[in-house]
View 1: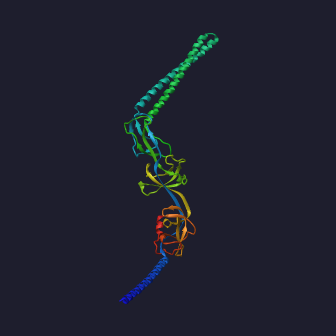
View 2 (view 1 turned 30 degrees about the vertical axis):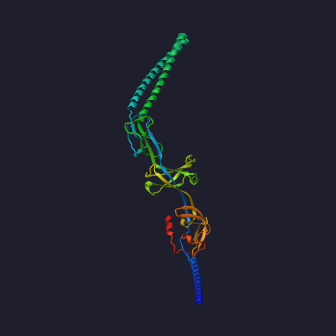
View 3 (view 1 turned 135 degrees about the vertical axis):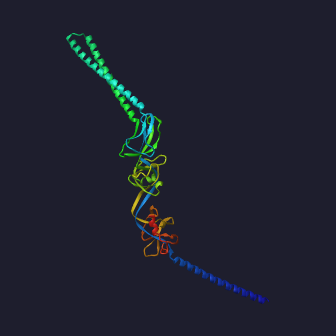
Length: 401
């Protein structure tokens, strides 16, 4: 029995050994199969999407937010106090140069003017009388002087006549002053009567403007210099925005600016920088920039919010790739390029320049052919690629331009 048991144990050990050997063989075969599949995968071209490397012009733009202001504006004020008889224009009305826009009650000023004219007439009459008396006193003085020289009249008589002549001359001077004062008062009265008719007067070549605000109504009592209306010029307008210090150096007078406003969606309005402030605001550390906007159709209005796009740089002969082509490897930016006629991707380090939409300017060596835009995670420098199977982005890149 012991012999049989020993035989069974030996047979079991032999079988176990055979199974272990068989397992090792199978595992070895599996490892070789996995390594073969891995090598085949490594040698298999990776599917990628590509786009052509372009050469041409690319522009750099900056965006700013601002608002529109009237090209010119002024407030029409009352020059005299009184009751507003009528305001002849209202909000949005068109006003021409020297047009009457309001009337102030002028009855009191007309009455005052009539009184000043009457006083002037009296002063003139007094002056005429004084001049006549002066002329008589002058002739009397001449006769008395002649008689005095002959010894007919005394010194006292001559002094009396001379004194009368001087007195009449003083009266003439007084009445002449009264006439001058009367004329000044009459002129002032005429101005007051004229100022009761309020006109829109401005300098410049533009002959038409628009009422932006109305401050008073008919019947209101106003004092001199009380604002009545605000009148603005809509052609041209001024777009105003503020720029920080880092953008200040890229702007200059004459640069073209494209403007958009929510009122007209994506429609572009062209203008040019007309003024750049030489100082920065203390509170915001930003400088004021003004853009002259023709606005000939007067569609844009003062107070509108605008977005301004300014071209700050342009490169005429740039190497341009899609933004999706730029990847970072080991903290270095670069692209994978594919030479024409070769199925291999090559890594090229690049320096990124201007970005405009999906187009990016790059600088580097040996940048020619096609550039990989999708699938970069599957490849390394020298990896085989299959860009025929990849998704072409040529149309997409053109649309993003």
